[in-house]
Image (cartoon, rainbow over all chains, first blue to last red; front, side, top):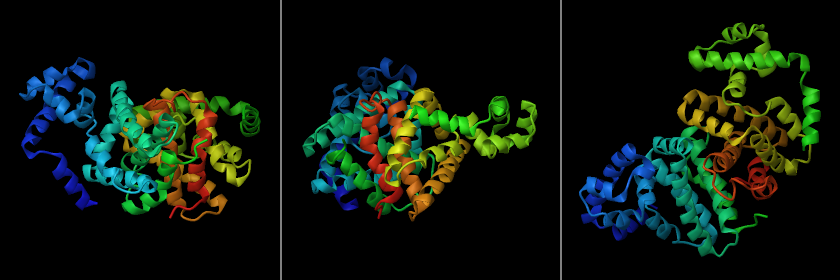
Length: 201
Length: 201
């Protein structure tokens, strides 16, 4: 997994632009903090970062994408993540999702997930951005797997993944909080797999 | 469902004591607010409510139980809930849990669940009380069903139920947010049933 990860990063990111990305994230934290989500403009964030506004689309796709990285601190780039997860058999997609979710958020630190839950519970806008992220991501995944009822399946996946994060990182409920990753993958992946491709009605 | 509910309440609660219970909940909100969880004593809460301290154990089992009702506002009494859920075939236990969870929290209003998540994300003590509630409740349920690995199964159930609540009531992710209860029961109950009695490793 660590090996795959490095390869994907090398392919997907250009070292020269990493400074621009970092500068945009720092500027976004300041501008979202001062102006809120609706008040913050892409132009204001780019100006504060000293880069062209087109760089926001280049690096984050949209203002929402920048918010997801800067404020929600999602520990993955959605495009890289999709490419990484698509690499394997369809009937193990659930395993790869659960394993990657845990690996990335374990790596980011539990307090990052805790801050995300606080944002989502306290701010309608943060909830909307998280919804948008899940919607975008799982629409592609579930569509790619050829399943019906994409919207319901998306929310079912979200319910299990967000709940797993809440129990592991926020409520810190043992043994899930301190468990190795693989036993949780074994226990939870069949749920996510069923929500992706199995019988739900 | 509504019919069952009324019967259980009539059996379980004595109308004469309901005033005492309400007074204790109001006093608890004041005392927990002033003194925090650790600083608040059962005696101080009972004194404020003008009742004997033994009434806390009688109505709530413990200081934690009172906190769960007064601050987390869990929309059920754990003892009544267990009796209600045990009423039916073992292989439909997951269905009854998901249906009851949604029925009770829909009834309480989504903002009650939102406040619970905020408490748990912001206060270690609230997280500990919620953990204790799940632990107590699911230890009895899973033990009663004769399954192994009670602690892991408890956290797996918690992850799916809390995640479902978060998506429906807090992130308000459609179509789960506005769905009728039964389609969600059909989609999610097999997950909870597997966590209760099925193969998890």
